[in-house]
Image (cartoon, rainbow, N blue to C red; front, top):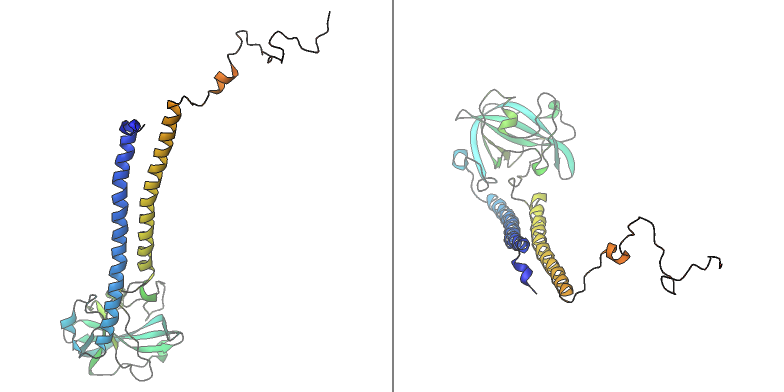
Length: 287
């Protein structure tokens, strides 16, 4: 009954199934591990943010380069404020506004982007308070460079002079004349007239759309594995039924055999009546 499983066709089917099922299970498990890693990163980021509120600020050099472990830590830097820029399309407490970003020329020679505060409304250079003059020491939360699309960062271009869409060395390198740290700081206490900007979680550590995409892909791969098993059993059942019918001699009759051979002269043959093939048609006149 099951000898067909040894045919080359079924050897190919079985090998495909034996390879496809482990592959689907592996991919599903991998996507699940990605989701669990994002959940762990989200939990660690929350715990780190709570710790950062109470820990002492550390020198900037001790926290570079910025990664998931150092993003959100409190830091301190000393230098002199220089060029000032505006970062539009930033929401705070449900209101539209913009950041006031000022470059701090540190003692190391590089410039550190410092968000001194947030203002409501459309970005306007005349409304932004001027930075303090002279040498200053700033204390705030260290942040990793932004990427357009992360944490609601705008990706639009064509901004007026004096404005940037994202706070990153790649975005600022063309508008400032000095070397930059690949990080930025938001002050613990905003300068007068502005609202302090809360720190944001590092990219890739939140339960965002990408995290739930990983969870959705997990389900898809497990469904694929189940579909492969279902199709194998369905093909097996059809093959067994066909073999059983063949053993009993119950095979589908060919249409040509059921109709009978056609006449040699190509003429149509009328079906025999109830009286047999010799019975004449009732419409034929009797002589």
